[in-house]
Image (cartoon, rainbow, N blue to C red):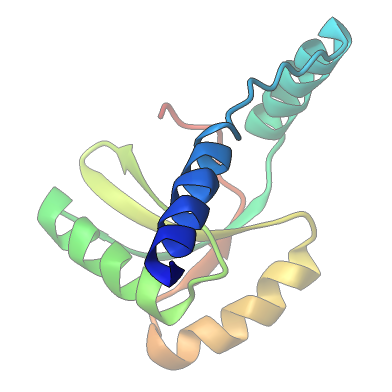
Length: 123
């Protein structure tokens, strides 16, 4: 009797568990997409202070970026190609003061680091 009740309960539970499927339809104003596109374009074209940590060949830049990502996980690090070398840059600071504060910390581990305001490069 107990096994029959338990079996009935399990089958009933399985039926209800599979009946929990639904489709979500999100409706948003089309202006949101245009605002996001505008926001992205402004951030891409605006110039920010960056910290250049080092430069070299592609392999050297990749190795340096890996180390930087471990040391500074909260700051975005990128590799930019400027003929004839790859440059590893860290952070995106709106003011020079913000950049200089972070530069002081970065120079403890990477003494060749420098603060600069680079031109927009291709991605």
